[in-house]
Length: 64
Image 1 (tube, rainbow, N blue to C red):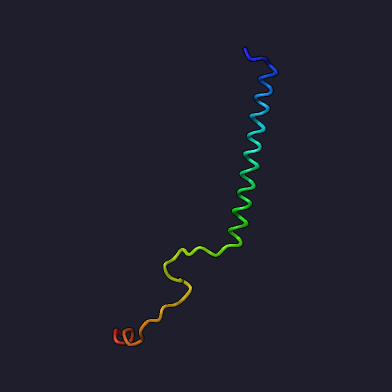
Image 2 (image 1 turned 90 degrees about the vertical axis):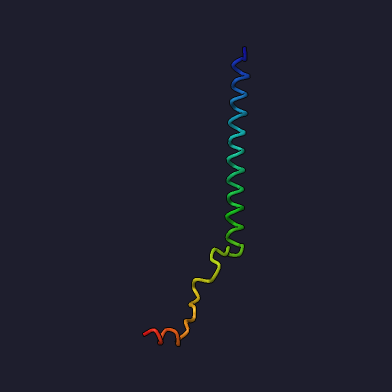
C-alpha cells in the first residue's frame, strides 16, 4: 500500500507539472501573438476587394 507521504508527493509533482504546462502554453501564446502583430497580413482574397474594378463604359451604355 502506498503511504500517505508518497501520495502527497505524487499529487504535488502532478500539480507542479500542470502549472508548468500552463505557463509554457501562456508563453507560446504570447510569442505567437507578438509574431502575428509584427508579420505581414495574410492574404485571404484572390484579389484586393478594396480596389474597384473598371467597368467598360461602352458595354454599360449600350445596354441602357
